[in-house]
Length: 479
Image 1: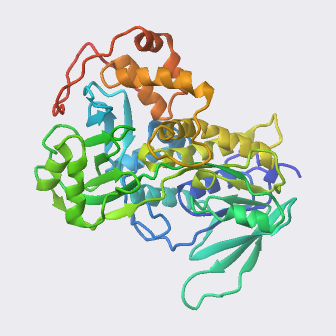
Image 2 (image 1 turned 135 degrees about the vertical axis):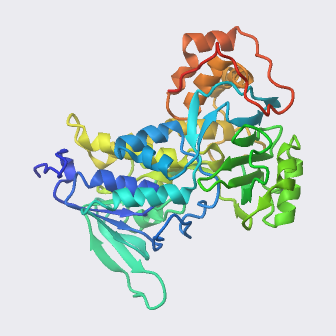
Image 3 (image 1 turned 180 degrees about the vertical axis):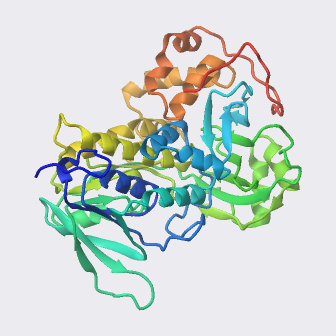
């Protein structure tokens, strides 16, 4: 088929002149639809919920009431896909937090020096970001949304997917599924995806799943800071759990001036969803900083809990009996322990990878090749979350084994973590990697390696640093 051109002139690629269906209307689905619209005649987004008129949480995104951050890698990806989006986000009030200077952070027994920021992330609500994204993406007349509808199966056979089966939700809805033909079906239905079962029903092979589950659970509540400043010039608090100290907490600002407070623990000692018990749970943290603040702050919402936090990677890229015309992105492909804040960023990174794979004139964008590109684009995020979670006590799953090649890397990374709270060079490199804005090789740059291998650990504060550390001679540029 000859490639067609969309209205912006981008090559239509292998699916030019056809129909694509995207299952799921969240970040990953909307961004994928935006990319596909440049390569097909029309895109249909199938969404189980009915979209709210404004920036409100919805049932299909159970994590939407919890803390979300947009890392620098995600900011770059979103701006590449939708120029001007970060400006819209800032105009909507989404706070921009510079690290380490804007956080009072504890990790591995150390308080971080609040040096000038080398990286930034946005901490507005998930609902706000999705609302802005819907406005931009759904303005494209090539993209149509079918709301209040479940995808319940695939059309086709083991060699090719040819569409989806849809069933309306709600009272009075049709109970019989209706077929919708498509040349490409893209699964962006999230961590609860049913696509492996759908593929099996076609006689195809479900993907191998790699799983690492720490049993982490968390609970979140909205508060108003009655003092207005958290008792500090910082914008938030962050207590990071580790294998020897398994409780965590994060307090971050929202666009309306309130704060989200999330407490976390492992299976068997999960944070409660009762208000009083929630605040009492904060006393288990290694320092009373968070508990003291909660005792003066004003609660504004019930406590919401979340416990499905396993890392799961579905290996659609591996050889197997799988049909052409089917792709997976976002959490439907690779889902991470939310404590690392990677989900929204990886959704945007997947969309950029999809765009690049479809526009690559050197290679035919076959289903398997594109799926390999998508999985590869999220490998660093997986290495970070899975690598850290393997070391947590009680971690389960078929991918928890530590390989021989991991041991040398873990030794080096342990030295990085010992130095990153206080050393501005090591800290900037590690934050760029964690923010998915620089590759893992940034940790082995000569200046970083010298500090890690030969330099001493830089002293850090003995108490929570409630004011920024001013060092005019230390200015670390963000990536």
